[in-house]
Length: 302
Ligand code: A2P
Image 1 (cartoon, rainbow, N blue to C red):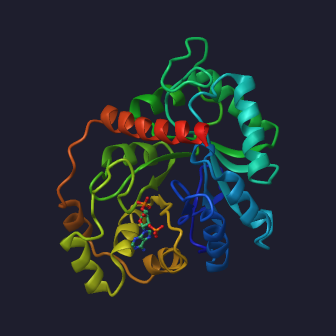
Image 2 (image 1 turned 90 degrees about the vertical axis):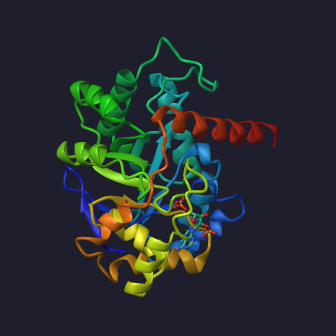
């Protein structure tokens, strides 16, 4: 739980965090409490997951001082104008019951008009949004800023204008979607990479890596769970992982087991050999957007 990676400014980000995407209402508060007891100090949140206030309740009552927690949240796609960025952050801070975030990410490299899904806002831009985030760092409301779902092209554009470089790029990463070139690009540029859906749930439903014979064989060889093999695979390349679980036993195992063993030099290659799902980036994004749109319209009806 104390294993960390250093960000460009020397701050230490715990290498294993708890993901909260699709942790359902009524479940996530108990999961976060269990995670605090198990030793988690890094929590990955987003307002679009519609459960930040529950996460906040658990963190506020968990008995762990704020200074020992690492809380990440994300700015949704229809909040790109300066006033909207500030309002979104205030909402997230209120939900999470804190007065600062450790890390605030631009959720996707898109610019939507307020309260729309996928309608471009021609009067806003990622560059301007970033300048607002930089101001929020200056004001102490967020300690670090970063991005999510950015590819090399979007990162290069941001790096060319940023006064404060993005500390983190959070992307979907697992042996079926290794994105090796992008990971290396980030690491070369001093950007720490975080893997979401490290167990393969993500936008690629049905990746079924936990039941892959290759993964199971490695798990048996090292006497750990298949999940630990998948987490270790990313950790060994310096990538932070945020596996989601609402099950107390599984979330505790996810924090401990990856440190009990190491994959040897040829084993990561063996895992890489699991057939990749063929997928264009744009398609993955679109699929995810559709899913989020369902979540949003359900929330609007509720
Ligand atoms: P659950 O919350 O019931 O534990 P990802 O991190 O790739 O998004 O995957 C999370 C999914 O994997 C969730 O459905 C979660 O379900 C499940 N999961 C989390 N940890 C483990 C584990 N150690 N073994 C098996 N399944 C797990």
